[in-house]
Length: 245
Image 1 (cartoon, rainbow, N blue to C red):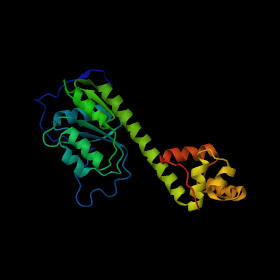
Image 2 (spheres, rainbow, N blue to C red; image 1 turned 90 degrees about the vertical axis):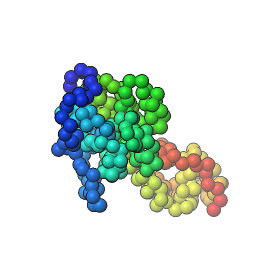
Image 3 (spheres, helix red, strand yellow; image 1 turned 90 degrees about the horizontal axis):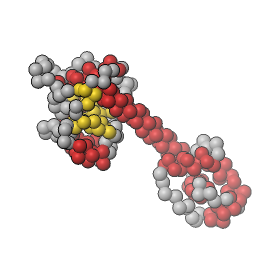
Image 4 (tube, rainbow, N blue to C red; image 1 turned 45 degrees about the vertical axis):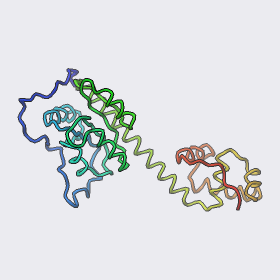
């Protein structure tokens, strides 16, 4: 990949459609079905067809699947939340701006890592986008290698986030299999309470606590107390320890 600066797109470039063979047109009523097996995709939203072509030209030779959209509305119509990848987004567009699209995605709980593209003097806007959850930003003119590097980092972040969400979902599923008493025991155990104090708090004998504790370890697939504590932390739940029967 060359390290030359990417210039502003040449206005003399042909005004053909920005979509190429890697793009997926906005779907009809059932157009989002059967797309979960698609590889991670770099979604690019910009109202400048020449810039869209240029970004495609930079990313596709690196093996990235690229889909381009001329507006935020077009992207929203085509995107399905189960799609993986990242979003390269220009902040200034007519109609729905990049920031407005970012806000809409947050409302819809769509957590794609976003790489913001800004023009000269628009860094404050990019900083605002970062504060609202954007992954990174690049300022025009940018080098081709910089774009590739930021996109690859965003794709890696998306994979990390999705793995973390799947892990939390599995932990929640396991915790849901616990009886109410086992959840009470788990809540106290992960705070470091010994069996004797757990039993005292819940009105149980130490032997009964040990039985519940063993069931918790088995159902949660925890190999050690440290495993159980990590699972509790991943759930992000505030546990002060349940009291009473």
